[in-house]
Length: 352
Ligand code: ADP
Ligand code: MG
Image 1 (cartoon, rainbow, N blue to C red):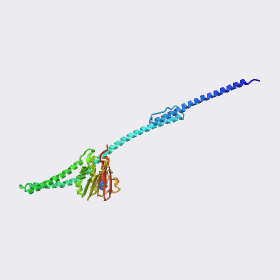
Image 2 (cartoon, rainbow, N blue to C red):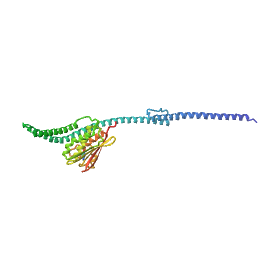
Image 3 (cartoon, protein in one colour):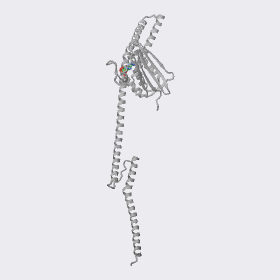
Image 4 (cartoon, rainbow, N blue to C red):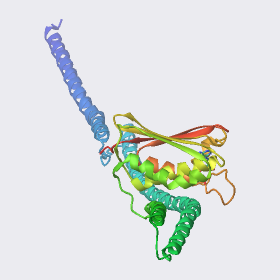
């Protein structure tokens, strides 16, 4: 019989040692695994998160170190590649934007020059149209002046002039003076219109501008038996505009109206204040009108329904450009064989 108490005690102690040893090993293993995971997963993911935030804030130069060859390493590489591509694309876009701006600027310059040329061409054409009638009209008063001058010279040869003769001569001289003034007026207005001046926006009396334009076509109207009616709103006086160009626009519209009424008709010019900073100029004629299918095209450069050599198709295109430069608009309403109305809407002052 051998007592087992001692052995059992030893076994119990060994078991206890085994348990605590195992527990310790487990704790060490857990800590090791934790640290491994921390290094291999948590830190790279944190770096990726930081990278995403940096990119989100617009820093496309941010790049993350690739330290492993596993899935996370692959993800990091893809992330870096994406950032680089993004940066490249952004740079390309910026460059494109810049060249686009330059090209737009260049084209705008070209367009402005083309528009300036058109204005000049149309001016010369309307001047030609005007000059023909005006020359014709100047001939009449000049012939009268010549006749009266010859008559007076003949009378002056008579040594003893009666009182009656003197009154006659004075009345003939008055007639000469009136007719000369009329010729002078025509020439003065023509010169005003043909003068080449850089466009400028200034305060101008709208009444005198409209009257100046109709004065120029006065003889034109008479030849074609056209009655003119003008009405200008009393509440309007000074408007800010480029006087010469507005005059040119009015003339182009008036000449078109006359050309639409070759035998007789009525031209109505109505200027109205329509708002705090807005007024309209409506020009109506009782002419041939515009066909529905032509209406969308009449403001296009070189669109004309007139015989070759008669129309350039530039008038309305130029008017359109001028009105646009004044921050205004122009509309048209027309009925075939009834007439046409052009309405220009313009600001009274220019907003700064
Ligand atoms: P053009 O007078 O040289 O033909 P415009 O640009 O001045 O060129 O006018 C273009 C076209 O618009 C004219 O050919 C004509 O068909 C039409 N048009 C313009 N104004 C009138 C009008 N008042 N009445 C009828 N047609 C018009
Ligand atoms: Mg015309």
